[in-house]
Amino acid sequence: MIVVSDEVREARAVVALETTLVAHGFPAGEGVAVALDSERRVRAAGAIPATIGVLDGEIRVGLLPEELERFDGAAHKAGPRDLAVCAVQRTVGATTVGGTLAVCRAAGIRFMGTGGLGGVHRGFPDPPDVSADLDELARTQVVVVSAGIKSLLDVAATLEVLETLGVPVLGFRTDELPLFYSAHGGPPVPARTDSPAEAAQIAETHWQLGGHGLLLTRPPDESLDDIEPLIDEALAEAGRRSVTGQAITPFVLSLLHERSGGRTLAANRELVAANAGLAAEVAVAANR
Image (cartoon, rainbow, N blue to C red; front, top):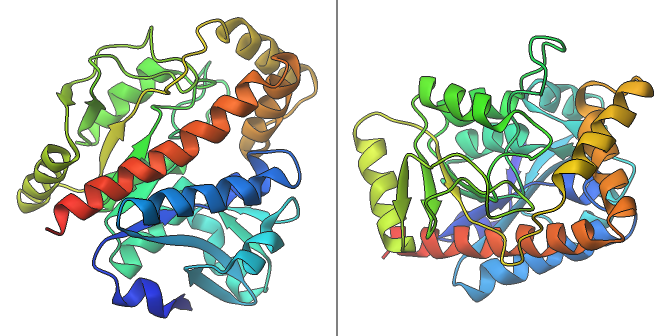
């Protein structure tokens, strides 16, 4: 059962936000602060935040601060396949990008802000791991604003899959695909846009042509260009400890935060909120 808050239902410009970032993207206690900062950025840009998660047998669209606290550290990671199970079994479900997109499709929300998009894991097909984010983006008419594709993935392969799925990938004031923590070194983006209004116009035209999701990539304001070796180390450590599937991302993020002396944590916190703000600017522009 999907329950949409009155504020979200009555708003014209709405931005969806996920809850996996609250539960698994940051150390205990910090995810809620990041989520609230993201909501503040959305409101400051003139839109209404719709943070999504599963609570008490319901898929909630629009959460109160005290409800957000229930996702901190103890929630099940809820992709598209998990939403119904979490709802029926009354499990606290923190929605991934894919899970959030599935709810957006059902609730009619067309804009979303997040950190990084999931995709093809390094070494594919061993492991044979491709995020459900890609399929959901390809079938949902939503603009997702992110700092590119998660840097622990095979970015080039993910970009190729997005092309195959017909998902436009736009660079916001950049000609390079951001690499999450780094603004530099990624492959060229297929197209660039320099304003929220133009991004909104591209999305509307894409939808009129029968298209679905779009990825709008925003470079981080502070580029950490020396993180790649740490990512390699963290992935190698995940392999040694047999960390697989949905557990890889939170494991790698935790190691990166530790081994970078907290630099990746600060960068992650800021880019998530900044992406939410840009998503709101695009949503407002689309509703003028």
